[in-house]
Image (tube, rainbow, N blue to C red; front, side, top):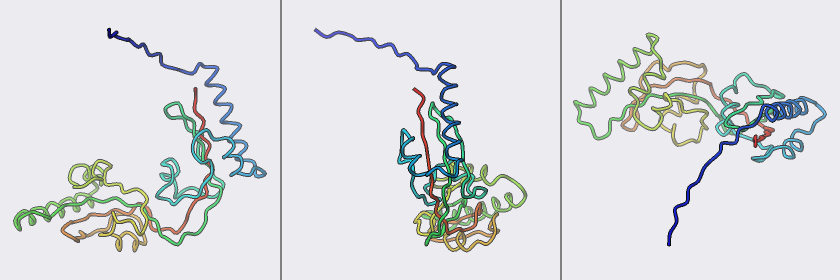
Length: 220
């Protein structure tokens, strides 16, 4: 004989006392990381509840809270503590070291030509020229990328994030991205391998990697 089983779930919400306790804990962790006598790697590894605690990252692999502010951060800077979905996270840039590879940050709008008739390709080229003109006239690159761009990055407004010079996803625009000497729109259409690209440089190439201490504490 089978029986129906009903379940009732109860959300676990930290009390005000618990929240204050976690805030105090994170303040103590931050103070320890700010202390120049603290061994960042040993401390972070011993304190974190998730992850490695200490490792060396390429810019393309950094946590978003660090990667999104990388151009303004320096050795010794602390990011956080930040609370998201019941998890506190704090990061410290313990060191910045040279890298053999270059990294840059860029956005793209891409138009596919493959499989289209010559007439259709002509229309695509005209659309690409119009979009480039609209960006130059002050319209949002991100908004136009969401509206016009083909491919997987349209939903992110064309943002490719931090990219490595060996990354296959930017092979067609590698020369333009890693040859850039200033940020901003590359004011021309780039046509390669049956695609047309409009490219915006968010960060010119750097050759750096980051030693990062990271402490993650879950509120339970």
